[in-house]
Length: 128
Image (tube, rainbow, N blue to C red; front, side, top):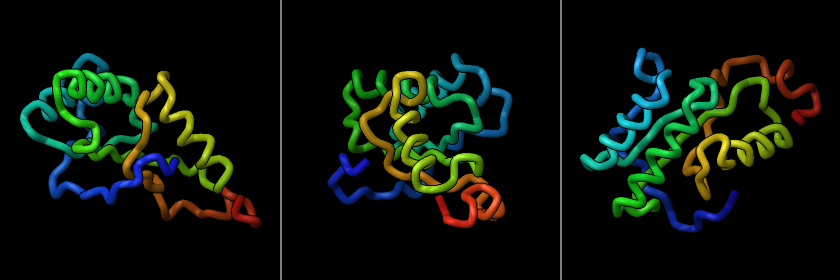
């Protein structure tokens, strides 16, 4: 959204929030992300499709409350193929920032989830 004017540094290591039993339980996601951040980790890799944005956001906010600066935390998320295209992507990112999802002021990196998905299907011929 343009709010983060600093040049972000991409951490070499990160915590992926998909594809294990603990990634789909909000309490365990919250505890995992908070523990990771308090121990010095700084990159959280999530996606809307993982259905755990809200717990990730709550853990990040708690880490900030405990003294970790938000600018030190690198948050990545992904746009599902059904939300490809400029207008859909912009609306989706705004939704990700809402209290119902991550509840953050900004996201450091937004990627295309499954980028090999046929764009003509997701975006239409105009790319919108």
